Amino acid sequence: MPKDYFTMDDFDLKDKTVLLRVDINSPINPSSGELLDDTRLRHHTKTISELSESRVVLLAHQSRPGKKDFTNLQKHAKRLSNRLGKKVSYIDDFFGSRAQNTIKKMQKGEVVLLENTRFYAEEHVLKNRDFSIQAGSHMVCHLSKLADYFINDAFAAAHRAQPSIIGFTEVLPCLSGRVMEKEISMLTRALKNTKRPSIAVLGGIKVYDTIEVMRNLLENDMVDKVLTTGLVANIFLLAREYNLGKPNIAFLEREMGSYDELTEQAKGLDSKFSGRIDIPSDLVLNDNGKRKAILLDDLPADLRIFDIGLDTAVEYRKQILAAKNLILNGPAGVFEIEEFAVGTTIIFNAIAESQSFGVIGGGETVAAARNLNLEGKIDHISTGGGACLNFLAGKGMPAIDALKHSKKLYEDGHYD
Image (cartoon, rainbow, N blue to C red; front, side):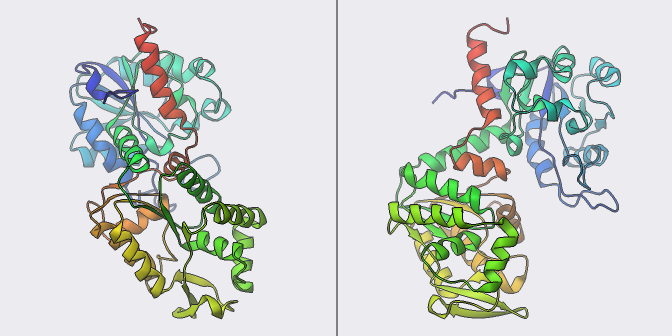
């Protein structure tokens, strides 16, 4: 079926100059400035490698102003060079004369990485403005004159509306890179899969976002069942009038302030979709670093909840193995501590063992999957944190909207 946006297969990019927006935002050691993980860089190497006969100008960001890891992209260029097996030149300029002169002199096959896009005020001041206003930014005006195409491969930033992400829509044909194309394809497949049963396992600590995901999945009948874990499960326990105990209430208040609205939303979903949202039947408390299992009847707890119980994990595993379609976001507990990674391990391994189509996403989720060496064993592990959540929640995705808009503009002869 034809896509409603262009991909790299739709144009001959040989000997062309392409602006390639990537998301290589990475965890950094604040002392040495070294990258602690280069997963996102590795994902983009496929797209860059396929452009071996083009002149490739990389646009990227690292962190944001005020953060300790808000830094230049010199180390990123070095790591990319190692991963690609070819030189990636770092230019400590973005759209000024040095950057422009470098791009003009590029030869076929060369790759340059321009400076952190977020060093420049336009990236912040013009966010969420419409295409035409962003197209008038200095960065777009200067860089677009030097390029033939704009390729967006930055799915992890696809929920952002900033000049380096959507600003080129009005002035250059815009294509999806391989990361972006795969993300759209796999996440769409998970949401539209007609094979049943379809199950979502939703946990972690981003409760506001996750409840929006849950609502979208249930209201549009994309899943038959939701299995809750983590803080998401705790909110639904509160909604069903279980008293979690002072330590857990205090933690909720620290994490999200007032949680009354969330509890009300959970009650509403429980009522509307009766029998389709599962909560844990048992829990694990942190008793001086040791697991202490309790049943719901044992609540309120005088210790913090750190994991789902074994009975719950086994029951969830059973349902996961019987499913035909699986969507997972969020670990089941404090998986960073081995003692409390049991629930997460059982659930994630069940998804890897399942014969169903499965996708998982979210920052913590991906980290947990990597810790369990499950890369390559699950159909799709999303590179996006907030972007993946927005997609699953059915919320706006400016970068994807921009790609679709560009295809319409092209078909109307706008770029001629």
